[in-house]
Amino acid sequence: MKQIISPIKGTRDFYPENMAVRSWLYENIKQISQRYGYQEYDGPFLEPIELYAAKSGEELVKEQSFVFPDRSGDLITLRPELTPTLARMVAQKQKQLVFPLRWWSFGPFWRYEKPQKGRSREFFQWNIDLIGIDTPEADAELLSIIVSFFKAIGLSAAQVKIFINDRKLMEEQLCLLDIPPERHTKVFRLIDRKEKMEFQEWESYAKGEGLSSSQINGLINLLHDTELWKNSPNLIRIFQILETEAVSEYIEFDPNIIRGLDYYTSTVFEAKDVGGSVRRSILGGGRYDDLLAAVGGDPLPAVGFAMGDVVLSLILQEYGCIPSDIFAHPARVLVTTFSQEMFPYSLKLAHQLREKGINVVTYPEAANLNKQLKYADRMQIPYVILLGPDEIAQNSLSLKSLKSGEQIRISFLELDEKLLPILAG
RNA sequence: GUGCCAGUAGCUCAAUAGGCAGAGCAUCGCACUGUGGAUGCGAGGGUUGUGGGUUCGAGACCCAUCUGGCACCCCA
Image 1 (cartoon, protein in one colour):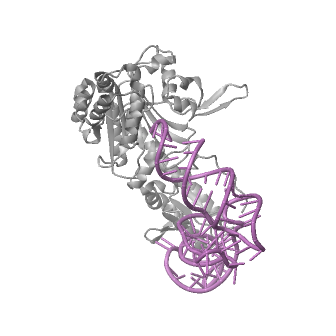
Image 2 (cartoon, helix red, strand yellow):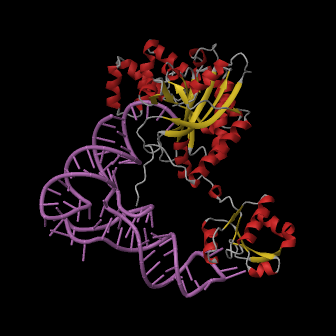
Image 3 (spheres, rainbow, N blue to C red):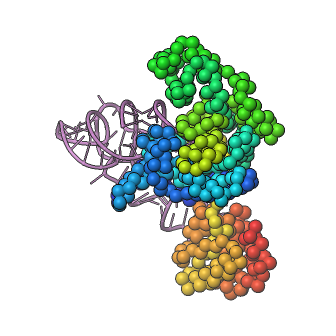
């Protein structure tokens, strides 16, 4: 075999069956986004590194972005996330836009990571944001969108859950433990890692960060306190609204949820697979009230989330949520070719049907019928039209259904009445 | 970026202890040159991821490298 140039590490080839899944996902995302009145937008795939430098997590910019110089030497970044672009786009037209603003997007992103299950270097993300409102009602709307989406693609509350917390609440609680605000970022990192480390290890890590034994105990109590949300008017209100929307079975308070990105200011949430084997989070988001001002706009509150396609696809596969009919071949019918001399008849019929809006393929070779039928069968094309000397002599065609095996003769004079209804169905 | 595991036909995998590279499925052909899925017979298909080394001899052992998977790191 000749040598095939390998694809770029961490990228994926979308063969038709993979592309069908991606398109199906896109259609669901589009439908849900629009149902809630969100408008589609997109930004450039290339951005200057400075856009991310101040606001995203340091790790994301320094370690995980594709950065390269262009021909003039300027540093170009393949976008690792969309939120800073969104913030810029809004800030640029802030005076002209009408708020509250509801925008959504689905497109490719790049992160320089070690590829493994659930993680690739090129992936797609759904971003959806509600900008200009700082109420719990706005946060609840985003959560409601997530639940609607999960329901639409067939994920139940026993399979996936959204875990929610509030950074403001956590900061207040840390202050009550006499942990000063300037140390909160470090303590948040500590919370983020707790579930991944052995307790002993975590405890000594906590001590290394300068926490006293009583502060560590206090912190542990906080992280086990499932009633802690009752100290947050924001969360109380959110749960209240979600209750009336009857979507609360999908949502759970979890004081361990902090999120890695630095720009979150209050509500934070993350959806996870709770019934299966995929450990990574499906989506993450929250409120980021300071980001617009940070990219040079006037202060403007915002809430939103991002969902990657890689983890979600794994979970959908695991639960068998991907409908099999999305792989269907676009053609409804194959028009066979009896011989090279008779190919024009087949071609003419194919054109005629296409003009009536039927998806048709021809067989561009006078192969034996066996082969042509087998082809249609393998490609899952439901109908075959046979057009040989017998049919032509009687101004007719034979239509065979590959599903039932039945074959009928139809006169050219009654194509509209007899053939089209079958093929259109 | 770090550590561990894996890579053999298009796919899934086998190959005692280092000794002739195989099977099933798929593909193609024939039985059947105007009727698919089934069956039978036959055929093609490999520099064992790549490059080096040890050995009379390497798919197997050693080194490097690439790709994938797992755990870190981080995150969608």
